[in-house]
Image (cartoon, rainbow, N blue to C red):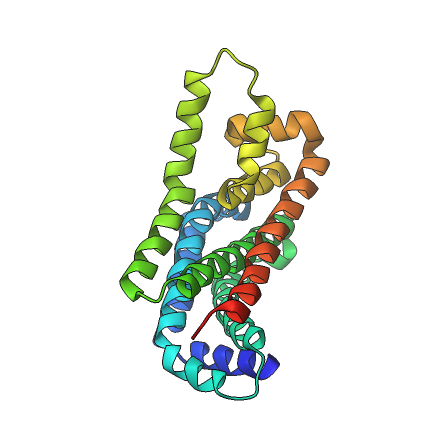
Length: 260
């Protein structure tokens, strides 16, 4: 698996899209810090970009890489290699290359503006950790969709729909449900519903760490009231870890069962 990972990683970091992704975050970091020299405020602004854009990029790269490398994958399948090692190696290569572009692209401007000497370094480190989690989660989810659908158009469509549902539609349905059933005690339902959306979990995790009461929202306030800042932080982090592990396990399961 390590050889497959290494090949996929080097293949992707030589791709022009990886450079574009890296340059986008590099420019975004410099622009944000140029407009606002306060590192803490820049981290809060960056959070809104990270929790929406990173899942979209992970989704697109995951499904694109699977379909673009399909012929090479079929060649590997003819070799005496474990199927799960091939697909998990490819997935990890995509996730690591995207994570590296994110970390380096944002790290350079923030370090240039004195991050290492600021108290905002811990908040920024958490933001990068969330970005890595979201990259791993949505790359795995899109890879699962691609593995389950041989039709490229259908795979792309379902992947974008999955991102759109978790990024936009889920919150809309959640809010409408709270309004309709507002006369009922929905605190526990709200907490459980939040666990099924990694984007909401990521947002709450950051806001609990920053302790920004005005931005916590309904579910974030519930997390803080039910679990407290520290407990809510670790519950959110554990839930995100499960969001990574379960799709990755399913990649291994599907690859072993699928008829290529």
